[in-house]
Length: 108
Image (cartoon, rainbow, N blue to C red; front, side, top):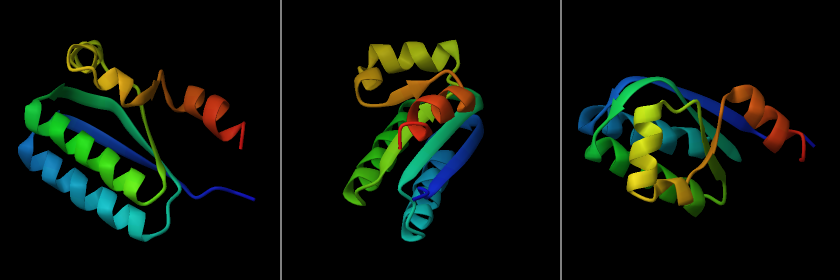
């Protein structure tokens, strides 16, 4: 049985405008029956509080759809923000997509 996995690659600055786009993207991804969503933040340079809020919204939407959300490739700035806001307890993060594939997809 193969899982329906989607990787969403974000880039630039995750702010209010990009956060709203993220919510819309996650919503449409979930309507396609995705079971696992990986948000790859390799190209994200900065997140502000609105962007953080959008990530939390995305997590709530994914949970409501009985799916799972993971994050990978976060920068030091984002990691620090996650730790300061305790988001590191909410989001399971991976070093990169390879680590995600090894740890999450291999055990299914």
